[in-house]
Length: 197
Length: 159
Length: 189
Image (cartoon, each protein chain N blue to C red):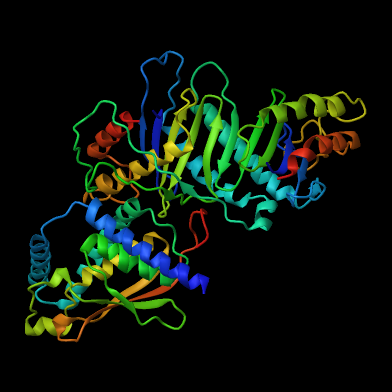
């Protein structure tokens, strides 16, 4: 009982921290500019790869990966969060702090696997895909926000969590909601001995 | 203020004495010169030695710059080096900043009195003059030394 | 005012080094360590850092009591009164952070004290180590103050080094912006 209440207290404090950092400690940029920039990246990639959407997906993922490995330092510098002991805590930190600080949204965490090493993030309003409608051929194959998968994979890798991240469904493809799945493969133990994992 | 262990290293890089207190509440717990601590002794000596040579390279000025203490998140290591190549090492908790006087006292009153001045005990604990590889060396087994060390440090073990 | 700041990457290689010397030091006596010496220093620190966690005495292992780990917050003072609303990169407000924080470094080396100076190490969750060498002459500088300073340097790093698209990870830092900002930050100590 006491651990449950301390768990919810921790959740609340993560939420408060995320909101505090978002409101008071980050410089902001115009959201339309952001959406338009991302949109132009995706459409240019489609043109460059001659509408081979598998390649575009891959390229978006690797771009996201490069962003993620650098963004994690920014996240840690702003929040100084201690190491998460398990994936439950990690999922809360990702949804309540990280997404809040960088994209001003809090995706819902659901669908935990029985071993608690995989979970889904349900995104209600995706700022990357405001005003976007996919053409018919792209609808079948393109994961528009695939950059997010890359960012999460890169960032988690830098804190020694080797994960697989992929989209399950996307409203742009006609599905009911946008769902992202994160699965922990292993913890990279060749880490610097500073604390327990 | 809790002391966890005490070590003495000679100039041949060997550990010639070690005393570990495993239960900080009980001053007669722990081991003296145990074989299990040999690996730890080597690691400890290696760490102190490399940090010492590194700080001496970086230091400026004519005065010798000796390493005094190394702190981690869990414990603190205090080192006292003598000009004869002996190193007295104490691993403690964080309550006290400096144990230099303690280590100096141990050197000047306990070690010098019972080991150096004792004509029956070796002054150089290696088996032969050319010993360098940590194979043939003895440990201090002098009863008077151990006894006086215990009586000096025991009051400090209690948390 | 630290004497020097070093940044060591995950694999133990030195990627940044800066000396901050006060003017009164006699130049003749100081034998400046060569760049090779510094590389050796960095890798020595990196490896002894790892050894230190293996040397945890048995008494602590048996105790299993979590030790206090919180670093209290120390605000930045501004003696020269530089531009009142200085821009702190992507950090809004007048300081990088305003609350006490958990020290990520639990069982690695935190500080090495010698006769002349003390070396403080701050490690991030990603394995990056920030090292500050502070002379023992000043009384006001203690571990808390230096940890706050090193966290601020980490914030600068996350801004000016990580966000530079032309910077490859784990490589030596050549960014002048980072250099300038760091010097300004250190002056304010």
